[in-house]
Image 1 (cartoon, rainbow, N blue to C red):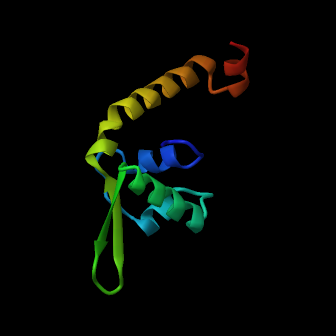
Image 2 (image 1 turned 135 degrees about the vertical axis):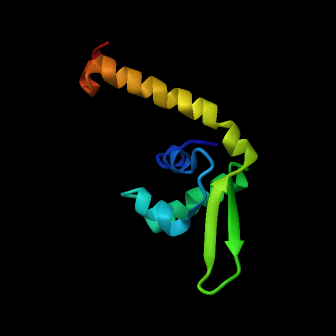
Amino acid sequence: MLEGRWKLVILFHLFGGQVLRFSDLERAIPGISQKMLIQQLRQMEKDGIVSRIVHHQVPPKVEYCLTQWGQALCPALDALLTWAAQREAMDGGNPAAAVRN
């Protein structure tokens, strides 16, 4: 469900009730192609983690936010962020130190 390089990154950007347009997500995630972002969002929508909100207007407006199920992941993501920050502080930001430990 959360496998792959980009899904956690997308979740972190939608964390905390953020509602973002596709273009906002695309700008916020350097290195992701438009095709990959579309694929990941569609899969996350299919899995019930992300909600796609279509506003029928000109120009078209599509927004994404976490569903209730996606919001339920927030405490786990917050714990993961805390763990990563503590680990980085402990290792002085040196990935090689983390491997040696």
